[in-house]
Length: 308
Image (cartoon, rainbow, N blue to C red; front, side, top):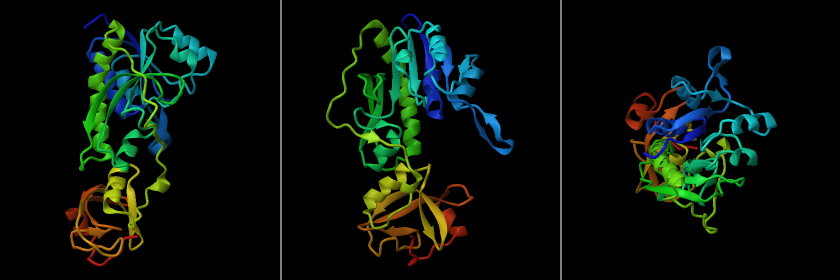
């Protein structure tokens, strides 16, 4: 490895942790971690640090949780770190110009799409919901625009019919961790040159709204498969069975016909606008996810029932 880089890591959720681990394992000097402030959760509303915060503390790395980076005080603190580079992975705060320009090599973002497709907040969900056959991770130089910076390194992966946002999240988190170290070393030694994003094919991955989650059985089976998998495990696409909400978490497209939403077999095959879906995994309110056989033993859904 080339000389260790002096790095600030900026991230918050589970998705970010493998990249932070990779930087530490590669021998780089992570001098500070920035993460979202602890949230209050559970009984007693105790403060709970983010996954990145907790991981950094276990490794003895100082953690900063400012509510904003726009104040002169926070920007001075950041500049005083004397960084080679900042690595940003799902941090959750906008970086002002003063922060972007403080590290010697700039700020680098690990983004879970093939830019310029799916700039923005929910690229994994949106790629599956749109029926994309491929996605990946882009290591991007950050600018003031939303995910507009040039791409330093890209790794691609197929989206399989069995993939959900949950499974693809884990795949891309690992891929980002595998890609960040060679990207940083290429940036530092000049062997990698960032390439501008194309001007065609720009799409925006807007934040998931829970109002999107209700299933419209008049849509084609392929679209509903992507809808269900793209919202699995959270927030979960849902329908109602005799007034009870049921989240559908995994399905496969199959042949079959009937009225939209009609259960057309005893194994929870459901007719759609065209084609049908076989439901493979679901979740009742207050229960854990279950494969269909287990669900139906305690919650029979007979052939002929209409899901709404």
